[in-house]
Image 1: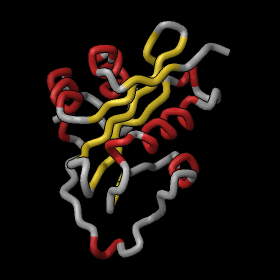
Image 2: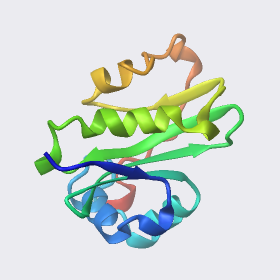
Image 3: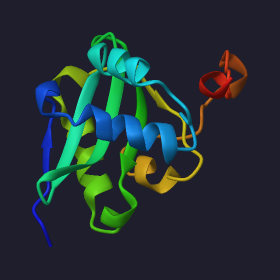
Amino acid sequence: MSSFMITTDKTELDVPAIHHFLGTQSTWATGIALATVQRAIDHSLCFGGFADGRQVAFARVVSDYATFAYLVDVYVLEQYRGRGYSKQLMDAVMAHPDLQGLRRFMLATSTAHGLYARHGFTAPLRPESLMEKYVPDLYTR
């Protein structure tokens, strides 16, 4: 098994690889433009996971670093799944010093409830209080 290294240093991120995964393999950002991915990275706390000399995982947190955070764009490349990398990535996200003491930390997932439940994420206590403006096909129009 290869070693797995996680960094928040944006200069280490393989932005074209992140863009490729999000734009062609994710279920949530199909067709996203490279410029949009770059802007999102520029304005977020990012976690890159590396194995075998390449970036194989990613997570991004949008936050004010005081009260609120939103976890997005979490992935591990398919050929690297099943090695515990998603757990290590989430451990790094949840341990980051800038993300401690937040009143609310949110995410949306359709497939990885168990991964996030390990860290205390649950369905909203009062879903009737949450609203969203969601444009699912924004990048493919």
